Amino acid sequence: MFWRHSLRIIWFVFFINLIAPYSCFSQNTSTEFWPETDIWYRLSPAWRLSSFVPITKYNESETRDLNIYLHVDYAWGHTQHLIYRRLVDQEKGQIMKVWMARGGFMKGWSLGENKGNYIEDMLFAELHRRIPIQGDVLLSHRLRVDTRWLGQDNDFSYRFRYRLMVEKEYKSGKYSIVPYLNIEPYWDSRYLKITKTRAIGGVTTSWGSKYALEGNVTYQHDKTYDTENLYALNIILHIFLEKNLNKVKTTEE
Image 1 (cartoon, one colour):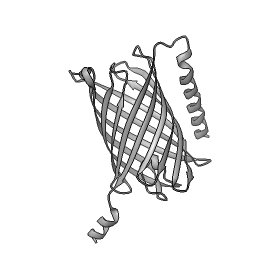
Image 2: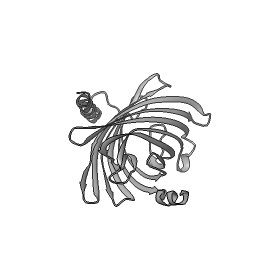
Image 3: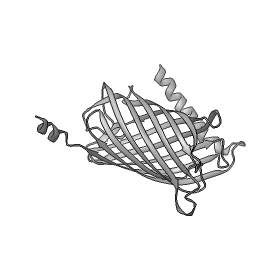
Image 4: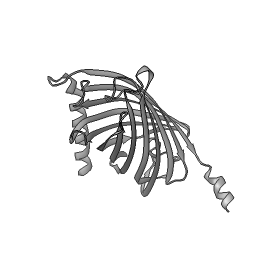
């Protein structure tokens, strides 16, 4: 079946990426720590707003970078499988949306004395398709287009990205644990080819209805920079907020 082939592809590419730094073709390797805070605000079962604030060190610059993301999401289509809070921020027991579209903006710049080294404005759009498969495993596809303005001169470029992810939720009372793996290649218009591949393995755990903590290890292979292989430990705090839908409904009535 298609999903079985997709899982094999994820495991194979993830394994290749892990051993890549030890091959004779690898160059410099960098290790990083990327803290992040994500805030989700649900307006309705279909609409939500979110903001991501990671501090990273991508290969665009030699210094730490601050990136601020603002998104609006719309989800539609139903499946009989329950929602995973890590993915779409729904109350426990609500029906999961099969499709999700996201549009957003990102502003990025370098921190400290070298704050002029990296400047980026980005508009992006995503389309997600989620497929529950055997064993309560969730397979998801994401297509993304980035339009970017880089540097002091606002040099324009764009990227196409495809992410394949597999995850499974385990519950114990009000607690939830979701291990996951994903792989994502980047096609860059500046080079007219796939220049970067990112593989991520991690776990998200939620407690109550307002908070979740996510930890993952990211491996990034980039063919266009001296630091060809990058490892990052990413710790993300998720904060879930929502509009008081019952209060709004009462007021409207």
